[in-house]
Image 1 (spheres, rainbow, N blue to C red):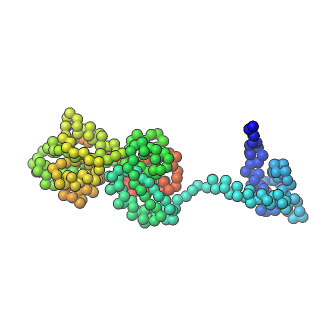
Image 2 (tube, rainbow, N blue to C red):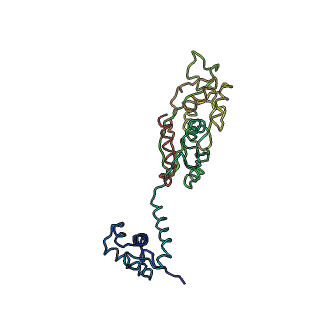
Image 3 (tube, rainbow, N blue to C red):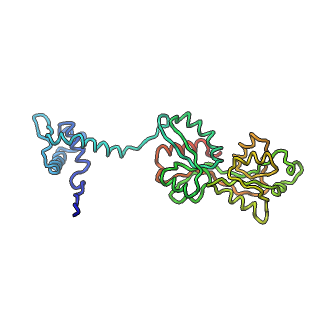
Length: 307
């Protein structure tokens, strides 16, 4: 047998519960009406509905004001707590980085870790000392699922194809340049830049990244036919490999600058057009208004937009 429950809104509404709470606290119908912006007849009508709903007088008129009945006293705390909980659902949560304890999970490639984290972490340490962070490199399906479930807070890089529920914002546009060792025997003075394309290449294709596909398509086209001698999974291994061999490699410009600082490498502008790509932030639509994630996105824009 199914027991049908009468909808609560047909017996009470929040306005009536608030009236009960206000009368219970003030012990005065006139004062309660003034606090709630209600006329005296409206207060009396509301109390009549409350009495019918509870089957109790609730408040008894005295010489000065009213006094609650024992039943009214017995439910007063529960009503006040229910109102507090409901009001709490209307309060927008906030994020104060100075005192917040928050663990962020950010998806990015090895390039992203090398480029973003040395700059980002000092800001975390200064402005949000209670924040910790974990970098991940998931595949496309795992990234989609992680953003949707909240297991991953933010993704940064070039990650198309995440679906309509994933929002994005561009931070900057990235170009490819070549890395070669400074004393490369085939790329000295007087040599044609076309020689660069005939030099054996090393390419990196980190898991979860897709921008190298378009670069490879150009390099392996009939018009170019660049020799691909070695493929590795991490861009961070490109620098040492190129520095100690005669291989060359196209890498994103920002990373190339960082690598060349520490190794005897030179940057060469490609003699052909290699497709640029946009470095973006990605987040799921459902988490768009979460204050902590909004703070993180705003920080990323402040620090890296237009790099």
